[in-house]
Image (cartoon, rainbow, N blue to C red; front, side, top):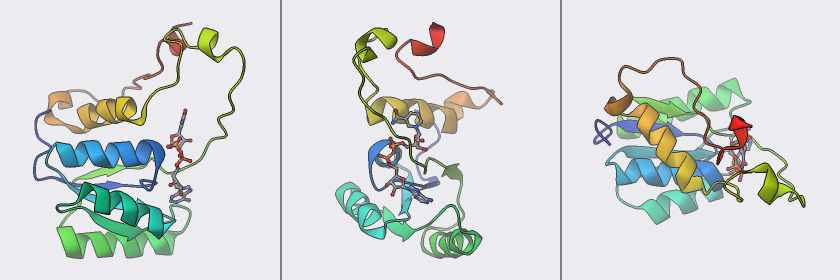
Length: 143
Ligand SMILES: NC(=O)c1ccc[n+]([C@@H]2O[C@H](COP(=O)([O-])OP(=O)(O)OC[C@H]3O[C@@H](n4cnc5c(N)ncnc54)[C@H](O)[C@@H]3O)[C@@H](O)[C@H]2O)c1
């Protein structure tokens, strides 16, 4: 992926799940990653696992004060933020009997599979792409 090396990327909700996968992928691409989460312990675990330049930041996306404080913190430690991945949130994903039939691929996505699409959209390889919704759904959105 072109153009992510050396960039500063802030990922919200990166203490686990998809955000963790995105933070890991950006680090693999050479980005300096600010791993943020409302639960600092999770962010610290992700950042420690990544190692290198990754830092952990406490950030609750529902609080303007928290956002301001986190941006000040990240900018002071890593420099200006080039990429924001606002992943934080939650969804109640409950297994149901028809899952394998609902998703043509027969399984939910791995975080790394979502992260690959996020890294592409943030990279120079997507430099001429604007305002698109990219479905990473194992074919479910085709139905
Ligand atoms: N997993 C799926 O199949 C799926 C499908 C569609 C959309 N999504 C969306 O993708 C995102 C990530 O999903 P996931 O499955 O990795 O979730 P997850 O529950 O595994 O992880 C979410 C992370 O966000 C953090 N978080 C929650 N509220 C926050 C807040 N206010 N501020 C900062 N951090 C906060 C949590 O502490 C947690 O670390 C969510 O926004 C979710 O709605 C997920």
